[in-house]
Structures are given as structure tokens and as C-alpha cells.
Image 1 (tube, rainbow, N blue to C red):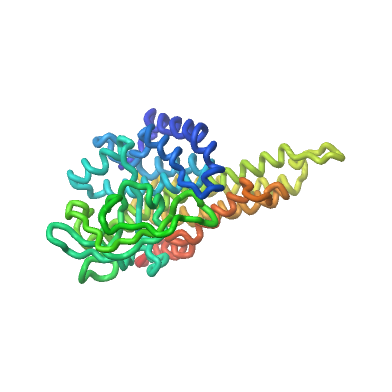
Image 2: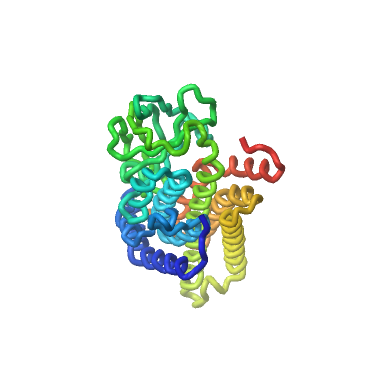
Length: 385
């Protein structure tokens, strides 16, 4: 799917900016403070049919690619990283379904998603596999004209709120890596939820654990063929997931830069009337922050462009995106904490939230260390796995 930088693309951006200003930003503080899933923001995005960003145009969606997803999560992430994560994971799940959708899956998932009537998400992580999300222990067993699923998933964004979940399983007798993807509907007997999410950061994303105790799904819920989903890992899951996360953390970094700039312009000394922006040391620190954001922005948008264009050399660019954006977000949030001084250390301060949210990037699979490893292997012509 290609992103078209056209009037339609500009209209999507205008809709996103309006929703961020009118809905996402006003609810952001409560989402973080109360560990609350951003229902109002997701409803507004769905009402504007922006939840169909990754659905092909022929099915009523926008047919957006990596650039569109990057742009969307960056805009949302400047106001509420939790909402950006929730929206981004829905888009990733949509892209995975769309990659090999059957006619039945198009009608039951993609058309409702495009109409703003269905929310999906990705559920790959497991406690036993850690960062190796492509090695599930959840099993898929034949059962008549369908399958039984046994296992558990961890850190399922939108957990308990989505209408469907794209999960990974290991078919009976399959080797490691030969996993199968399928869509499990909310309310499926045998699907249960663990404790509500109460995170240190990204507090509104409802990243809950999922239990699957003999959950039965029909054969038509299988994506592609059994055991062929290692294809999804680097062709669909990784590019869309990494771009969604890169946009989220780029938006967070931009908001940290904005907070530091606002403080430098507005904070004055009573004894002299001098503004903090007049202090040369702070000028240089702020310049370094700005340069870091712009270097990351250049990298991730170039990676998205290469991915959308089908560049055969796009993989290392895409792999580097989340790692670099995460590093930049942590750096800038930390610098903003220092520049904003005591005001940033108040409980539930906006800058303090940025630092908490930014730290999540390094532990979210694939981790920063794993992405650097994969990037190096890709550049050196070595297999990633």
C-alpha cells in the first residue's frame, strides 16, 4: 500500500490535528493520572474514519502506508503517547489482517474497521519469550472445522477494549518460527483477561495479559496458511509496528522540546528581569535538543518513504527507527526535566510523564538492543534470526 501525498493525505492530517486539539489533548492528563484507556480519543478517531488508515481504499479505507502511520502517531504522540500507542497498535493489527485477507476477512474485519465500527490490535508478546516475540508458545490445535488455542499473551495494548485481537500461535508439530497468525474476536469463549494495567509509563494503553484456555476459532480466522507467518514478521509486523512506535516517540520528543522552549521563554528572574532564554548555556542545550529531534525526524521519515516505495534496502532504515526515536525521546525528556527545574518535579507533572512514557521504548519488544543487533546484521548482509 502506498501513501499518496495528495489532497487526501492533507485532509487526513487536518482531521488528525483537529481531533488532537479538541479531544486527545484535553483528555491526556486524565488518561495518565487515572490509568484510563483513552475511549474518547479512540471514539473520535473512529468517528472520523481514521481507524481505517491502513485499510485498502477499495474496502473503504485510506490505503495508507508507513508514512501515513508515522505522521498520525507523531501528531497524536505530541499530546498523549498512550493514545498514540493504542491507535498505532490498531493500525498495525489492521495492516496484518489486510496483508493476506480473504474475502470473508475483508467483510468481517476490514470493512468495519474502515467504517470506524471495529477496533483491532496485535497480541504477540508472551512472558516466556521476552523480546523474541516471533517464538510463541501459545498452541494452535485442529478441532473439526476450526482450531483450539491454548496459552497466554502479555502486554496486549487495547486489552479488554478491542473488538478483535491478532495473535501468534505455534501449530502442533511446527518448528520454532513457523508460527501461525489468526484473529480472535472479543468475547470468544476461553478468552479471559488478567489484572488491569497499572504501568509506570504509557499508563492509558491497557496493556493487559490475555488468557486463552481452549478458545475455539473457525478456520476462516486464520491469516494466510498454517506455519507461514514468519513472513509477516519482517514484511508486515515489524515495519508497521516500528513505524507506529517511532512516530509515537518522535511526537513525545517534540513535546519535550516544546515544553523546554516554553519554560525558557517564560521563566524570568525577579532580581534582573532576565529570561532563561538569555542564558547562553541553556541556549546551547536547547539547540542540541532541537538538532536531536530533527535528525531523528529525518531518519524515520526517510525510512517510511523507502518502505512505501518498496526500496530493497529499506530494512535497516526501518529497524533503526524505533531505537533512534526511543533514544531521542529519553534524551529530550531528561533534558526537559533539567531545564524546567523544580516545576518538572511536581507529582504528575507533564514533563515527568514524558520521561516515564519515554522509558517504555527500551523494554517494548523488539527492544532497543535487539533492534541495533538486527540493524547491524542487516547492514552486514547477515540473517536477522
